[in-house]
Length: 181
Image (cartoon, rainbow, N blue to C red; front, side, top):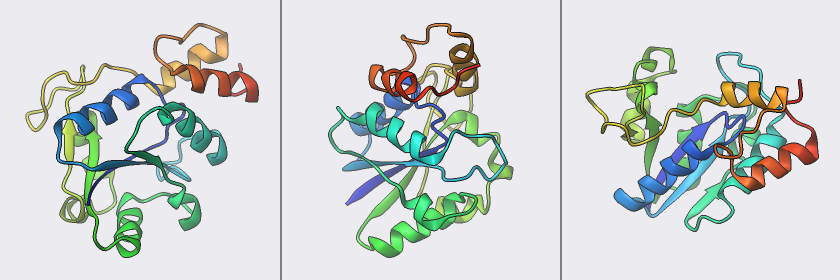
């Protein structure tokens, strides 16, 4: 089985994340996509608690067949390292052929990743072009430029982000009182 691995902070999940998964499922030889929220950001970014980000991912991807949200990084604990998560998944599911799904913006940050070359060997990347982040290894302009940090800032001031965040996620954020200023 070919499985796309789509990791991230998902703080909060937004329309760019949904479009990335939709694009991969429509264009790549991937049977399903595993959405994997980071348990603890390895570069020390402040995140709302894991349980909220996992629940928001569940809400965001609920209507998408062939997509599963995984809590594997919570079971691994500590700072999330993509390679360690991929290795754990491969050990649990030896028949899976993993592919890492990333936006072109990530390619300029490869040096910050723990053992990028080993990640690529285990899960050859599917690189999606992202507006504002051109890269020769990625298609041009597949994904819109949406930044979670900007969404959090708007949510903190009460500004609407309805066109950028799935309805189920917005409902969860309101119900739980997340990202308030």
